[in-house]
Structure formats: C-alpha cells, structure tokens
Length: 263
Image (cartoon, rainbow, N blue to C red):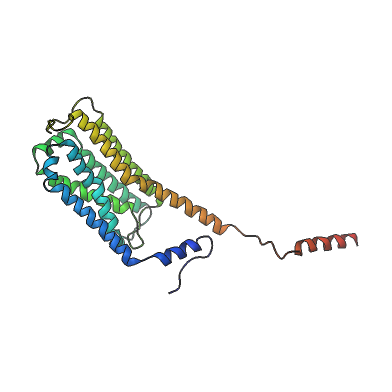
C-alpha cells in the first residue's frame, strides 16, 4: 500500500510514522494501560489499603490521587482508540471540555473539604460515592484532553494545554488550602501512628502537588511543543525555494549584457 505522505518538510517524519506504526502493538499497549488503571482503582478500594485509608490521612490522599488523577488518566489513555466520533468541532467542542473540567474540579474540591474528609473516616460506605464522583468526571476530562487517530476530535493543542494547566493549578490550590491551614482541620483520623495531623496535612499537600504535576505537565508542554513544531514545518513548506540555476549561466548572462551595453 503506498504511503500517503505530503511533499515538503514533513515527508520524512510522515514516512517514519507510517513505517513504524503497528496497530496491533498500539492496541496491546493501550489495553495494558487501561487494565493497569482499573487494577490501581480496585487496589485502593479493597482491604488492606481501603481500611488504612479510613484511619490515616496520607493513605486516604493516596486513594484520592488514584481515583481522581492516576486511574482516570490510565483508563482514558487505554480507551481513547475505541472512542466513537461525536461529530462536533469548534466552540461546542471546547465548551464540552470546559464542562468536563468544571465537573472534575468541583468533585475534587468537595472531597477535599475537611468535613467531608472527616465523614469519609467515620462512614467508610462513602468511599463508593467518592469512587463514582471522582473516577467518571476524571475519565471524561482525560478523554477530552488526549487524542488518537481513531478517537473523537479533541480541542486544539493550545486550548488542550490551557485546560490541562487549569486542572493542575486547581489541584495545587486545593493542596495549598489543606496543607498550609493553621493547625489541624481534619480530626477524625488516627494520629497515633503518624507524625501528627498537621504534618500529615503537609505531606498530603506535597503528594497532591507531585501527582498532579506528574499527570498534567506532559499535557501542557507536549501539545504546545508539537503545535510550535507544526507551525515551523508549515512555514518551511510554504517558503519559496529559489533555484541557483546552472553554474555559469548567471555570470555569462551578466557578461553578455555588459557587451551589448558597450555596443
């Protein structure tokens, strides 16, 4: 089958992509990511991790990071290739991404409020509601942010980077409010086996910062760099190339013109 690659500066990159693409290998890799994400979600929702999360704030924060960020990211990256096309573009598509971001930020904010954290420690059954309200909006947001040739179209790369940055910054703000509060704001967790509730809150803030940066930073820098690179390639393709001609013609023409001027 011939390669459908455009002429110009992108030809070599297109040929390399066509030659190295292996749909079966990509499908296995995507399936492995989805299975890993589901396995992590199950691991934090069953004993012993689920039991420890009801007694220790740091363990509960690890559970939150998996349900809100790590699990949705892996599941969405694995499921993007089978995602059906929605057939929308432009501002409606961006509006859907903004709505997904708002739903995810709202869910994360609710489950980081100190009264809700205390309720999670006292009523373990609330963990099921946390699972649903964090995992589903998280998968929806990540499906909007990641793209694949067979998936539905996502927002343009600069907008995608902006949405990812807003998601990361919102998690930083939530972590800051919890980690740098004056004194202990969470009281239902056992501080006997920890460094103290204030220290646990600070550890939780650092954990949220690290996980959110690790998850969202690639979605900020990679689309922007790819967008800039495509712009440079398009400039290269549209730049007219002036041929130097055959050696000696220019000089010869100049001498002939000079001779005709003397005559």
